[in-house]
Image (cartoon, rainbow, N blue to C red; front, side, top):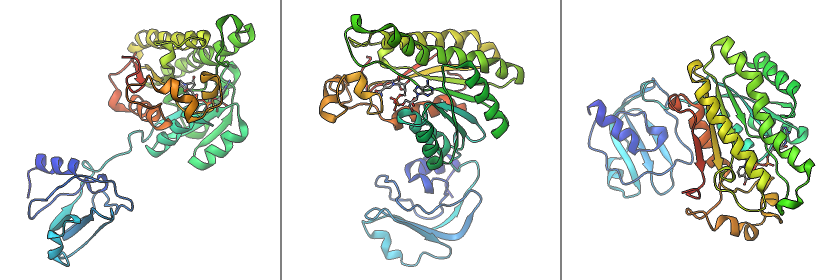
Length: 345
Ligand SMILES: NC(=O)c1ccc[n+]([C@@H]2O[C@H](COP(=O)([O-])OP(=O)(O)OC[C@H]3O[C@@H](n4cnc5c(N)ncnc54)[C@H](O)[C@@H]3O)[C@@H](O)[C@H]2O)c1
């Protein structure tokens, strides 16, 4: 039997669904990893005496069973990634755990774009999610698709935040995480042409929402002694502004600054505040940023200055939020995490 450290090394080298297996027998011939299309789930605690597992590199198929391996000659088949007579066992400690299990999150603007991506990732990682959005139809449909809760809500209204908090508690018993994702902008234009109404709307949706959410929910976290977690979706616009989006850029700079200020102010209560700043992506707002129809061709000017050569995706943003919302980031507060392929370097 391999030493535990060796098992862990092996576990990291093999596909995730097999990562909880231990091996007895010959040394594995590991030639690289590949995601499984139809993974065989081996649950924590499940064991095979003298069982076997085969992973076929060609098809990505995985099979396994109890007893002796049926055809050991497959061991030399280059298509077979793993093929052993082995004693497999699993332990709860080695099995992958959902990263947000037991957490309750509000995701604003979750009916579309980045917010939908964040809600989806959070559900996948075990969180209970309440989406809040002004768009009723899209919100209902996304919630149904993802298997989470939805409520119509306008992030610029105090009474909606009070209702959101109450709904999260009524539905799930508590609240741990607030993702301030809902945002807006005016169409890319000369600063002198921005109307007062545009200015007010951008500041209300992007900045006042953060004021209201914290004003309503921080007292709840403090009263209940919950180590709450706020994540604001800001933007690279807040630190590396592009022309003709002055007040959108300024609103995101305000969000980043307010987030850092509250991070230090509420650290003694263990309430964490971080922001995530994506570079341009393809969502419901993109046509406004680029000032024309959202097509790959029209996005080129914005994407060409991204060192990694593409725009951000909802999955990129969701992965960053998942990390910051999880206990892995327990010591991370006041950070503005750029999800920008190197744009802000
Ligand atoms: N798309 C980009 O290129 C990009 C880049 C950086 C940052 N961002 C930020 O990402 C966040 C999400 O935007 P997106 O790009 O996914 O756009 P999106 O238009 O696809 O999604 C925004 C969502 O917010 C909702 N919303 C708008 N106003 C609201 C309000 N008052 N109350 C509740 N919900 C409201 C909309 O209905 C929509 O579902 C925004 O804060 C935006 O500023 C976007």
